[in-house]
Image (cartoon, rainbow, N blue to C red; front, side, top):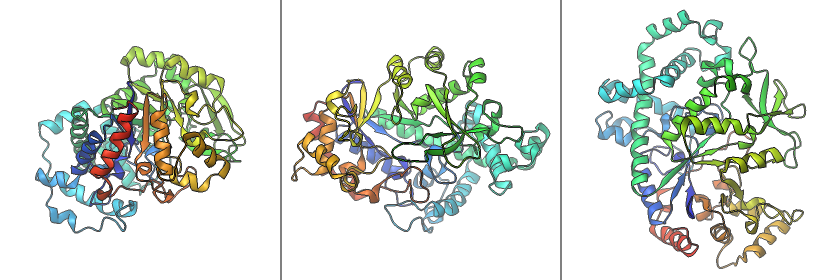
Length: 491
């Protein structure tokens, strides 16, 4: 990476009159804003279709796109919808927050109208052929899930849960139109995504995507590849993912994701992962690998436990995995999310791969750790600095809620003045650091408090909702950002 800057903004947080950020006009305007602000990168969160809890890190499929992100105005422009068909819907209660219930109730009704009018033309048929390795399983899974009242696959009748050939053939024959609907939805998503990505690249903006290390239990990935996960004969997990107790959480975290059978994956030359990464490398210019430490060693918790106390560490696939990836796919630009509990094996793996790791300014000012690796004067060039991530408080929220001795230390370290403002002082500190790339959540440019926080880990119900409003994306802000970018040699 050259010395550069970028902004973290999930697609769902883009402005939109229809309740959810989409791949329409506002996405192009956002890219123009990034260009004007002299940014080189747009970092997004995972793009997959979400389920219970609305987390993009718990997507139903590793390959599919989120149907909510399909822009309705663009469907109107190509003759698949009339404006009256979607303008009459009440899409949100507040323009700055997603109402997921309204999305679920209304969006698919509108998409069904559009897909009914979409002819199975050359482009659609070519897409179905190109994506057949995952697309049919996804469409079949979504169809059965609806027939089963939304139940997770491990609660389906045995014939469907275990993918009995005759049982699946009956579904394919009886519900062919429904299966086609889900394929058409993905076609519409990727037509729009590819156009947005091409426009960003034309403007000199690269897109950083995010790949979760784990997939949720209730996903087409687990259903279609049960032999690659630590499951019992009833498709229930034997062990689940999480992280151990620490100073932030006395009980640790229990994520509930099924763990991989790395031994079997190794015998297959990591074919499942190779296919997954190959597709993500088509979607994005750079891939941030979430929970990178899990490739060195991962925390295994017995299924059924509600805390992480009985968990233990297991050895991950290590450097060999990344050697196989490079051999099969060539050089891919990765960022290693190396946050959290870091042991020597994790630090060694990051160093041996050569991938840039992450530094978060909010972690730097623990008064009990004067030599924190998150202090900018200790950074190597080969890293990515953030004021905070989607899992952190906003910078303004951090200054408000964290111990005064830590926030005072940050003010002194960066010589932050009242005139400059707390958030902009931290942004300046990130830009001035040695890190090759500085990524700032858009909420920090806007000096927003925790009402704009994206996610609070280990909580449900109030996450992944915040959205940018159109008036917040203006030329004055772009000019201010561009000045700071140029000042610190990141243009």
